[in-house]
Length: 278
Picture (cartoon, rainbow, N blue to C red):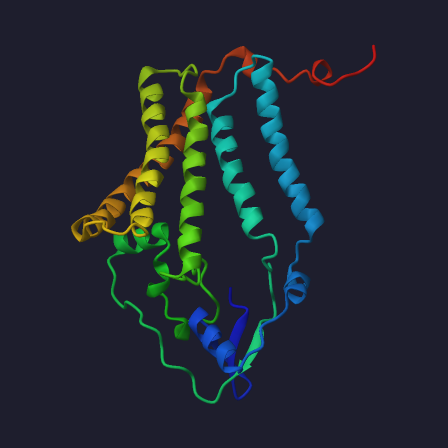
């Protein structure tokens, strides 16, 4: 996140990579901050984060209430419901993550470490794929950066944490896609939009599941090497399909707004759902 920065002769040099930090901690050249110090750096306290999550879940409650009352839910609302799964997952993962840190830890060095391997030349479309797949770190040379780039993730590559992160992310992606399937039998302005919505909804569930297969097969003994070699190509081919499906779902959620039933504008009658005296 750019929380550590090399300084030489009082001048900032560049952010530390994950590997630099680990090496310095193991050698005793850097004492990492405590959990309490990290929480103190965060600009968002537990109350503000809780309110954000409650607001997100309140939208989910409203959607459920509309379904119970038989009121239609628009495709745009279904899309928003899908994004709530990602929002809640991000807040869980980043609950103690510092935000808007203005002053990094200064790490004084006499000689800067050898640069990590960086792929200097990369075709633009492959660069985009790397960002989608989370492999973009090998395109970043922190020696040339004054701050950590936006999509820099401190990739752990083949570590155990990387495995857990990939499995969780893909499972959340499958749940995200499954929410879109809730509109499977909804009324659409045209048959083409309904067909595209169904195909794209299935794609957002199937593609993350297909991406999960090579990760899980890597844990199984006796899997043929040729299968493990072919699966990464399947992963690479699936990513553009997933991105296209996500874009089409977003477009269709807006195009369907041109023809909504009158009940879509009706509000939930909460007094009928909450126990009260008359």
